[in-house]
Image (cartoon, rainbow, N blue to C red):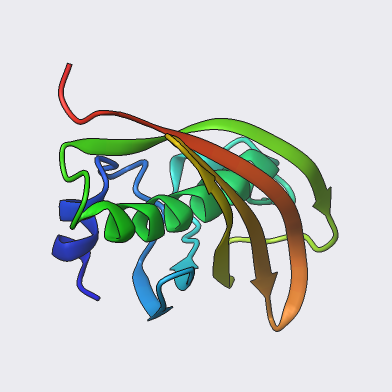
Length: 144
């Protein structure tokens, strides 16, 4: 899926758009990819002698994959709504991600209750699990 299509589905824009492409998508799950560059603002001081992608950025990138999944689900029923992150639980960080690494971002819808969507997220680097977590989003009006 092209970057233009991704940007049509979610409101994120560079430098905070943290998905490069959609690799696979079904009705209830999505797999995306992001390659982190050495010049990205969030690694400049994290850490100067051993740059790492911050954990919160890994969570955000996977949540954006989940937002694309939810937006695709909503296109037919609630096109005027946008998913907004409301909760992150059970985050476990297992592998470091460094500039130059490509990660796969996996999000799966677990449950939908009214305007709340519950998901599971997983970030992998070099085929190994880097982060696992649960998250939720609610639906907000696209424009204020």
